[in-house]
Structure formats: C-alpha cells, structure tokens
Length: 165
Image 1 (cartoon, rainbow, N blue to C red):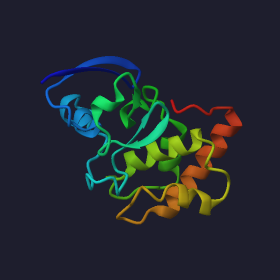
Image 2: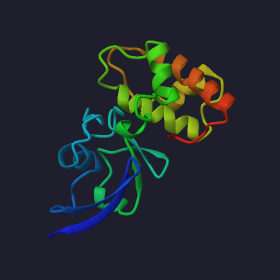
Image 3: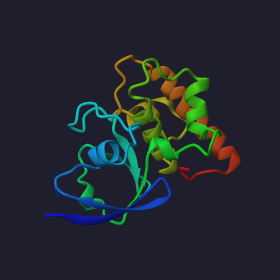
C-alpha cells in the first residue's frame, strides 16, 4: 500500500510517496530526505533529540507518523539559518557555549526556537529550564543552554523578531 503526502520542509514543498503508513516523521526526514541534523536518540519521545517544528509547534518527530502531518509545514535545524547567517538562537548557543558533544544540540535549538515563538520563554531561568525539560543533555550543558535561550529571547524581542525562521 502506497500513500502520497505533501509537506513543506524548510520552505520547500515536497511530494512524498510512503510505502508504509507507519513511517515516523523522524525516519522520513533522516532516511528518505537526508536531513540528518534531526537526531534519533531514544526513539521513544523521552529525550527531545528529534525535536522539529511542525506548523510552528515543537514536536518529537520520533513519535509523529509522517502521514498524520500531510500538508504541514516542517522546520528542521537545516532550515533555521539564512545561508551563512545563523538564527539568533544558534548564535546564542555558540556565544554561551551551550553544547559539549553536540548530539542534543539540534533538538535543543529547535525546542528553544519553538519556546520563544510560543511566548513561553519569559525572563526567568527556572521557567526556561522547566519549558525545556523535555530535551535532555547527557553532558549537562543546561546552564549554557538556559543562558542562550534567555539571551536569544532578549535579542529577538529587541529586534522585533518572533517567528522561527
């Protein structure tokens, strides 16, 4: 049984034939579309390494069936920067040394972008930590991640930028 879906991925409309209706959005992105920035961590929705934005909302792509998002707009880490110009959240992660091994970083960044766009970041570090608690970092770079989210949120607010990309 073959299903045809259409997704806008990082601004480009894609028509995709699925041989199996059980394929996850994560596997579609990584294995079929070669967008390997989105990581497969636990494959159970517990670590957040696979976080992408679907219609502007944070989604654990390992738990999302690709077919259920037919017609959706998907933003991955590959679509976040504007050429060589980093997104403010990416730049803040670099400035605050908010990563060590880097495996969780794409999911952390996408979650932070979604958090800021949702207006949930505020200016309280504890609030940011709570809102980012679905994204785990085995290296424990949480202090830098929290500082990066707060800094990016301030920079984006000052520049009047709220959208993801």
